[in-house]
Image (tube, rainbow, N blue to C red; front, side):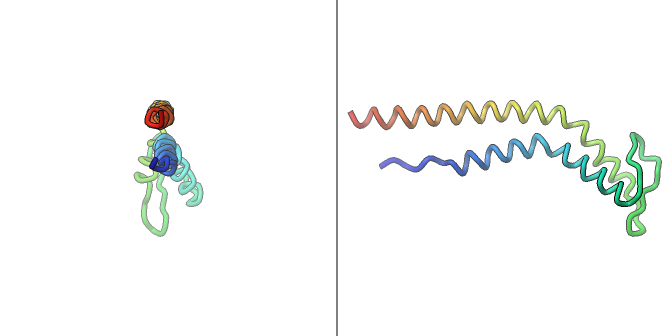
Length: 105
């Protein structure tokens, strides 16, 4: 009896790879959104105060905003991960197809 194909595992793996590739971009969007909601400008230097609920979040928003500089690197790694994912998927599908026919002859 053949086991079911692990479709959910492949979908979770693909989603994880895509999330990893886009995480710095999403962090930058979060920092920019938080700064704009507080009425602050997020520049290349953390010189401007950004007070939210009487706490200064200047350095946190600055550091989170600078994570966007990692986006080109993680997009390259994500692209490589997707290509590796696709290769493993094709090999798995072909292996399952041919291993099932070899036993039935």
